[in-house]
Image 1 (cartoon, rainbow, N blue to C red):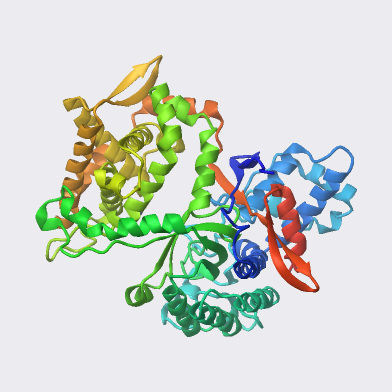
Image 2: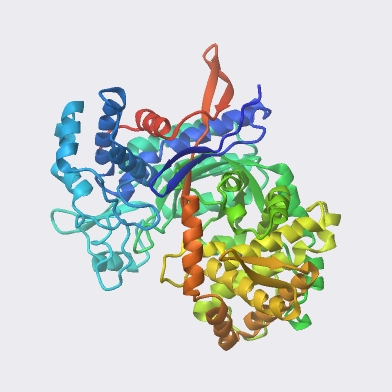
Amino acid sequence: MKKEKKYLVDRFADIKILRYFVSDFESLPVKQKLLIYFLSEAALWGRDIFWHQNCEEGLQLRSFLEQVYIYKKRNNGGVDASFEKYVKQVWFANGPHHHYSNDKFAVGFSSEQLHLWAKEAGVESLLSEDIEKLIFDPQYKPKKVSLDANSDVIQNSSVNFYKGVSQIQAEQFYASGKGHPLNSRLCLTADGNLQEQLWTENGMYGAYISRIIYCLREAEKYVCNETQGQAIRLLIEYYQKGEPAVFDEYNKTWVQDKESVVDFINGFIEVYNDPLGLKATWESIVELCNTSATNKAKKIANVAQWAEDNSPVAAEYKKANVRGVSMKIIEAVMLGGDCYPSTPIGVNLPNADWIREQYGSKSILLSNITRAYSEAASGSGSLEEFAASAEEVARHKKYGRESDDLHTLLHECLGHGSGQMRNGVSLDALKTYGSTIEEARADLYALYFMADNKMIELGLLPCKEAAWTHYDSYMRNGILVQLARISKGQKIEEAHMRNRALIARWSLEKGRQNGACDMIVRGGKHYVVIKDYEQMRQIFGSLLREVQRIKSEGDIVEAQNLVENYGVSIDLELHQEIIERYEKLDIAPFSGFVNPVLTPIITDGQITDVDISYEEMFDEQMLRYSQQYSLGVW
Ligand code: ZN
C-alpha cells in the first residue's frame, strides 16, 4: 500500500514542522541499513549535550515542562494553548531562546497558572526559582548569544561554554593557541584558577559520549570501506582523549573518504553559538548518497572548462584551467544536536583551513530536505499570489523544482570556482561588498548557463521552458517575494538577499529599456512579467561580465555603486504591499523537521533488518527522545 506523503506535521508560533522522506531506504543492502541505524543512534545520543550547551538549566526546564505537558495531555481538559505553544517553542529551539533571533521566548500564561498546573501534575517541586526566572523574568538570560561589542559577550550570553569566566579572562586563556578551545567548558575554580572541563568519555558529558562511542563501535562493523573504518576509530579516539591533534587526524581521514554511500557528520563542529567563536556545539547528520543526483553534479563539474570558455566574461578574466567542484547530493536519514529540528540544506567540512587546502573538503547538499521545503511551499499559496499569470503558475509546478535544483548545482559546482583575478589584486579588495558580489557572480553564472542548450544535451533539463520558469521565479523573488522576510522600515542586510535584489532590479531596469521584461500593476498589486527570455539571458550575461570585472579588478567603487543602488534599500510602499499580501497567506517563516523512526528487526537476538517509518508527530518524537536518549539532568 502506498502511503500518501504528507509533509506538514505541526504548526505553532512562527514555526512549521515538516517531514522528510528517504528515497529507496527499503531497498538498501542490510549492511548499509545497519550502518545507518548505528550512526543514527549515535546522532540521537548527543541531543542532551546540545541542550546543556545552549543553557545550563535547559534540561531541568525541559524535564519540568514535559512532565506537566504529559499530565495535561492525559488528564482533565488537555493542555492550555499558550502552554503548548511555549513547550513546542522550547523543544524546537533546544532551549528557552529563539533559534534564529536568540531572544528568550515570551510566555502567554502566568506564574500562578503554571504553579497550578505543576501542582496538578505533582511536579511543583521541580519549579525551582531559577526555572521560574528562566520562564518569566525577561531580564534573566535574555539572549542566547550576545554579540554586543560594548559589553562582556560571555556574561551576556546564556550559552554554557564558560562558567564564572569573563570575556577578557577567556580571551587571554586562549591567546596562546594552547588548550582545548573546541571541546571544553572553561571554568573558574574555587581557588581562582581557570580550568577546562573536557568533553570526553571520562570528562564532562562522559555518560553521553560513552554511548556515542558504543554506537560508533557497532557502526564500524558495517563500514563502506577501510578509510571510513579508520575515520570512525579516530573519532572514537578523539572522544576518548579530546586532543586537538587527534581531531585533525580524524578530519584528514574523514575528508579523504569521498566514495562511501553512507556517510556522517558527528561531533563538536560549528562555533557559531559561542560569542568568542571558539567552542563547538555538538551536531550530527547521517547521510545516504543520492547517486543519480550526484551523477548530475559530476556531469556539471565535468563541463567546467567548456562553461568557462563560453561564458560572457572578458577573456582576460577567465580561468585557463578551471576545475569544477564535485558535490555530493545526499538524503538526510537522521538529524541530531545542532542540526535538529532546524537543519542546514548544505554543509561544507572540515572547518580547518589548512586541512581544506591540503586534503580538500566535502560539500553536501541535503536533497530530501530541499524537496520537503519546496513540496510544503507549493501548497502555501505564495506562488499563486505573486506569479503574474496562471500559465506562469502551471509552468512552475511542472518544472520549478528541477530548475531550482539545477541552479543550486550550477552556482556551487561552477559559479564560485570560475573567473580569474587580475595579477596583484587581493581577494578581499571589495571589503564589505565582497560577499554580495561573490554571490551575485555565482548566481549569474547559474542563470546564464541554465538556459544553454548544453543543459538539455546533458540531460540536466528537459527543455528551454524549464529554464524560463526559473527566470520567472528568480525575478519574482528578487523584486517582490523576498521582501516579505524583512521587517517594515528595515533595509536588506544579508548577502544572498542583497545579491538577489541586485541582480533582479538591475535586470528589470535594463529589461524595461529594451522590452525584455516589465513590472506591472493589476488590481493594486505589483507583478514582474518577462516578455523575451532570450533577451533576459543576454542581460544576465552582461551583468555577469561586469560583476566579474569588478571582482577581478577589485573595483570597490563600482561594487559599492551596484550594491547600494540596487541591493539595499526598499521602496516603502512596495514593501508594505508585499508584507500585506504575504501576511494573508499565513506562512510560517521558519521550518524544521521530525526525523524518520528507524526500528531494528531482531531475529534470534541478532538485528537482521531495519524498518523505517514516518508517522511520528512532533511532540511524540520529542517526548520519546527525552525518554530514550536522556540520562536525567545535571
Ligand atoms: Zn554561494
